[in-house]
Length: 342
Ligand code: TRP
Image 1 (cartoon, helix red, strand yellow):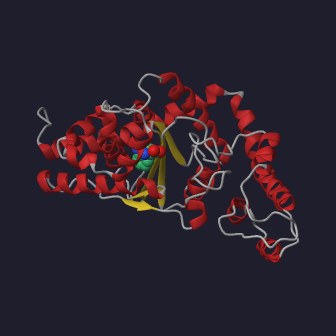
Image 2 (tube, protein in one colour):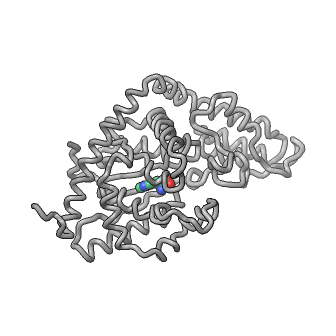
């Protein structure tokens, strides 16, 4: 059993619907690798397969395959199962039971007003046929968070309305049944560039659906051709022209990945002055990305050979997670008076 005494709980999850990309890497994975070293925290990271099914009900295989891919991404970037509890949402039935109690504390109109859900609905082709599970996933997310008594939830900005929804549910529960649950706080990435890394099109946030992503597991030649096709300053036509670094994806990536601040400053000044071609800057970015991603890709290839290990990690993590969630569920039912045989 995990000793959680005197520890703050960090919890976060990802919908497994494809491999993870550089937006995930700089926006959250790197922070998670850092957090797991801090002895004041216990971190839980999970694959939100139930949530992924809320808009992929007819394509479960995609979700199942992605559970493996995302776990490979997790382990290859350095999440360590002896420090971070890694688990699969669907393996914790207690979450569904909590969800059931929470559903009564939320109105349909409140769910329809959730900005994140509204935004997602715009891009999906549900029409009038919105699955009830999709509309109510913020409630299930509240169950994920509260089951582990999470104090902090490291997330991207798009998730803030979901954390707010969780906080409302917690307040409502604690008001009605007595103080049982913890109100979580969202933890945003400190670095602005990392919060919202654009895709290689330079226009939109990096995303699988928009086809503008560089994946953590991309092969070297794929990384190179993606970098070479990146959006820069459209007015920087001749090498001698002065170039703009604002909204220039190549420089935004350099801000996110380049460690050599002095060299980066020099490049920026040269580019703005004129005389520095896009190809040179892209080559430099390519070198940096190749160096960062090579060891990760190599670790991933090793891990791919040993799927048994992967499933063992997830099974152990899920057992630990389950023991924590069932303790909370017991307290929840106690507060509600539902432990009839106690
Ligand atoms: N909504 C998150 C995503 O889209 C996944 C998720 C599910 C989550 N439950 C969570 C994130 C709990 C943080 C905490 O990727």
